[in-house]
Image (cartoon, rainbow, N blue to C red):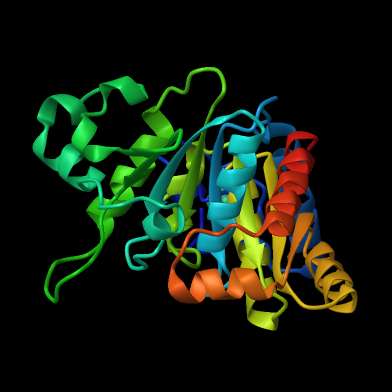
Length: 296
Ligand code: SF4
């Protein structure tokens, strides 16, 4: 293995994940094309496909509207009869709980993993095993948060990301339950492998060059992790033309589009005020996105 960006993240897995595609020591364009082909075939054959959407990580560039998308998907999943568990895995932004109508914050999960040795050593756990102080419940929704960076010199966010990674890996869901994670903006969580055990990656994309570029990187990293259901939601879309141009650019990068949440004044005001979203049209759009994910 050379010192080279590996699309499978092989150098960072505990086990030996190198498939000897040759990309990291290819010198000619012919060798690079051959290696890329091997990687694509490997990803296609090994993408983890599950029949039900159960662990969904919502990612994207900062400001693309992940939090609003999570709130809308939560409402749509509840309408579809699913029992929704939302995790705020964003170490910076504070607004998700408010947008879901949660009053007061649950204790951070990072405290649970740090302070309860017995819990952190569990190989698997269910929602019933998580102490009540770490879960806020409202109207059939359960909400947890990994914690926030609040103070200068508090330290790095690794322990927060590690809590999210453990939840995604170890939480056993009952039939009908679905876990949605609002991830940190950008690709850092992928560098930490937080999403490795998710079955669905939803990339929220606003119509902008940067957002599309970040979406391409996220999709490649997610596919490199072996996640089979990876796609985009277009958000804050103000016209059909922008929707179709953004879709075309994403498709050039191999990113499938699950659906569109069009710009609406009501959504923009809810985001501005940090209030629960109630836009019926947008919830319907989120329902269409869920149906597209399930059919993937
Ligand atoms: S999988 Fe390919 S790119 Fe990754 S380390 Fe192995 S040879 Fe290099």
